[in-house]
Image (tube, rainbow, N blue to C red):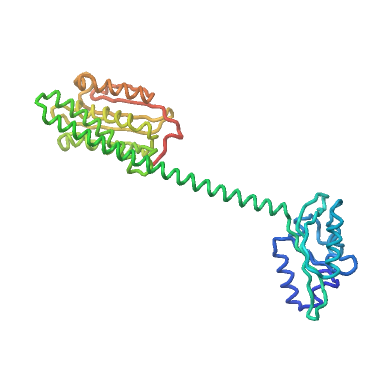
Length: 364
């Protein structure tokens, strides 16, 4: 309740108006006082924001002179000006050095607004404090938020530009590789020498594998991740399609993984060589069988296994005069992996384990 005084709202308004009056001031975030201009100018009302600022309680403030707030060493001229404005019932504003309950000081604006009744008599004076430090903190926070927002917008724009350029580069690389593969195939068709024609066709297959890797990076929308599952399924399907329908059953056990883009080219070539080696050499003369491809995470990184139940290591011819296996070994070394060949009798299993940090492997 408001303390009864010369300035009590109950003396000049209804109970409903008084309640609305108190609620309005209580809801303000700025500290507000009501001061009786008579006598020692006691405080008759204070809102919660004032108690939060000063640390005083209601009982310690109501009925006490406003000078309770004045810090030692405050300007006597400012104090005199405030007293004069209070007595005269004049609007006045000045900078004020205040004191909290714990003895700490604070700078605040000190704005006086007189309240008169219908007869023009001075009833009380409201005092609005504006904590300068709090305003500085608010201003600083707003400035920091605006700066962060501007920086974020700049970074977002820069990232969008970089992403656009990266996608454009991937798109051009894909088109260039596709054109190169087409030119190589065109040349291969015109050659009379079967060995030379076969060699160019295999070169075209490798270039096409690289082109497919770039295409998937471009189409994914995230040029930083290479979708191993999508590439493997597409590649294996195309290679199996070169065999008579139903000759080889394809079993794909490939986890949905995203590998860092810098590893995409080498990994695409490696998969093309290992899977292509099995398709071309494990099932000669119409031999039927099964080709299993397993790719997933392990404790050591990424594991790739290509297994067939074909003729096996001892019976399959050296692929491409051993160039294919040489390329596989080079690519595994580039990826810092480990390659192991197993004779399944019948069939062959190639296992590759390559180190990839856990944070580098992203599940799609």
